[in-house]
Image (cartoon, rainbow, N blue to C red; front, side, top):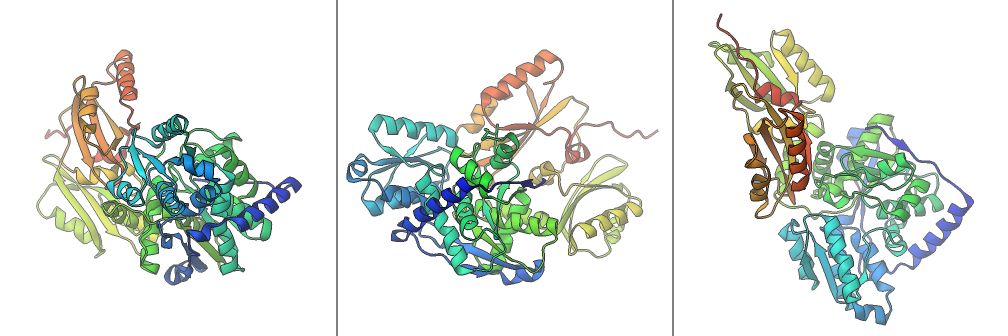
Length: 528
């Protein structure tokens, strides 16, 4: 990932900034929300050589900043509008913000949520008295239904981010930051639809333009980065739902213009870097952030490393803590790699007595975090091994060099997503010769999803490999190999059409080094 520079600064922008400040000061958020603390992360500050501060939006009544914008919008509705009721679409935090705001203001609320939404989030919305409508597999389908209900029932639609009052409500967070630490050098904010980033950046650049505001988004849901490159909002074909709070295909029109004008920079981060940031937050302040809630810290850490920043005061927003408990297993597994504290390697050793012990000795006493061993053929075996690191990437390179220097074939799988998500759980040897293509699918977590997949694809093409593992999110990751799908152009086109009709996000991962090393068909050794 590379950073994207953002330029701006006009007289019109200054006037708009003054108006935004007035809206922020008038926002009645504290009738519902609270001023959240700004806490120093002592351990991380020492490690990074900067003062790192975390804005604890997990301490809001709904454990997310979203209450600020939802209440600000709904509070300004007149009696006639309140009598009509409101409707919103959300898979999580915005839904809870609308539901609680409606309860406080005595307004009826319908909240449309995808059928894949985790029960813990559905229950939280219902607990505030809102009527939950489960519709569609994605946020886009839920939003379309919410807009239909707004038209059919005369409800007021509460936008999640692209509304001036919502943006003003989120901007109150920026005002708190400046009041809590007037000597900040940089503020890092997560970017999804852009409401928080736009609200904070517009206010900060008007009051204290020397303070840099930097947006952070996942590299597999980077709608702002795509919009900046295109010069306008564009819709991403797919987004990962791991950090679902910022998993937005298209940034808002209004929020895009404000972000382009006022953000100083934008940086994207990987899922592993987000997991590492979640661990950092827990270890320093004992808060468990949801993935979207740790995006800003992941960006801060990356920015500090890339720009060699020292001695500054840096703040990031912990934007939410509505995490599914079962997701923590995945986060724990990936955090070490994201922090460069674990190397994942594939190693070939000769299949003879004592060779396994000889290899372990070659690791020179380093802590082994994972070991998967499987006989490959009569002459050699292949090992999937995890090794703990204390000096990051430099040490990883040293280990690989030492193993290779000892005469072993070794490949680095630390950055291979297929290896980390699937292959590490599937070590089992190579099949006989066959023509396979391997695909990674995002698999919705609801009854009937597997049956739909097999009905669409499993009756036409032979499935030669299948792995699925739930990570406690609204969708899981599935790896599937098919035989003969590219035997000829007509067959390949037919397969592609079936995948498109299935509607599950899909990526061809046949070229993954981990797959060819451990699982895909390959020529066998000869005894001659």
